[in-house]
Image (cartoon, rainbow, N blue to C red; front, side, top):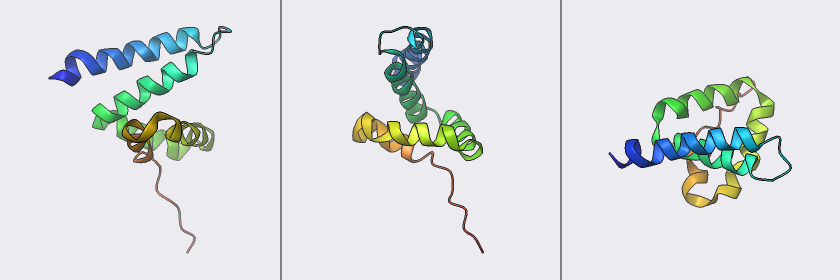
Length: 91
């Protein structure tokens, strides 16, 4: 109940505000996007699966999310680490 009433709207608001402030000289866009994404990944299994697929398709996005993971701390960073794509092993 708390996630639907407070966390998810806050995460979506953080994503939108981050996207709006990203091109401005204020350094608030990227941290807001990272925070919103981490909260959505922590509260939604469908967003987690979507991010895992996206990271598997794009090495650049995977690298960006990997750099964000340790900066979010233990509680939120662990959810982003769980979206890492599976390692392809050569046979």
